Length: 343
Image: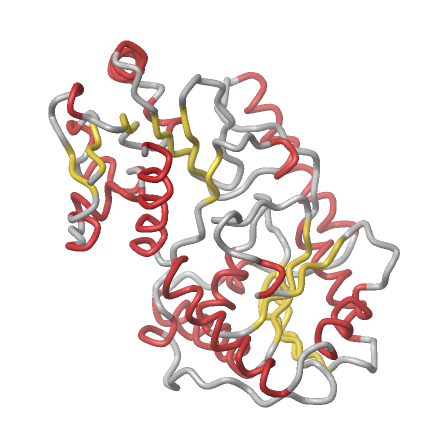
């Protein structure tokens, strides 16, 4: 068992949305399996790990509480777990600390940075009426996509303005987030999808939106858009996945959850549990800087699989999500890794 020491006064409804994801399953929605592996202790000397209870950018604003917990970790030489939320995330340089975040750039992240999957509900219990079933292999790969993708100068300028606003706030308001270069994600996405759509060697099934989630905000229309989104993933063997504002793709995990094959444009991404999971075996990882056309990279992957291997890969991706990428499954693996470090 790993014993965790934290400031429990932050484990309240006020901070429910900012809480360290593991603590959510220990306090707000108790998970019996995780409770058998992790225990919150009120004694620092008994602790194996000190945990910042909520998102770092929020917690650090509570100067007394955050400094007290940090100094306790240092005094008792306990490793510190830090959760940094949002599209951008924050790189800290605290000794003996481990950062849990959604994205960031692999080449800039330390070995002490753990990428969190985007934790989603099982689509087969929420939006899909069908049970999991692998698709038959077709001669040409079928590629799906539903989402925000738009070309045009006006759109480019809008994304540039949003990036500049972010940069100004980060610089002058002391935002605890990493610096990022301008990346007009919806335009980049549209260009790659256009390249695929006009190529007669692949079959595409794209539904392009001018706004995130088609601009739908009421519960009924949001559910309808989610059903259309997951139906598209379900009916196409491959789904094109590219980063958004942050350097990660939620769609990547949604595709795996359905048991289909992501085509991931690698923009210096770090994927979760890379020392446990051989990601090259589960998805088409496109090298954005390669001189090899993206269609050829996809075709080479598709043609390398037999009919049996093609079906087995879909099954393996569904199992991968169930066994490693759900929130409780992910922290079971983290438990094993940290227990191994302490032996």
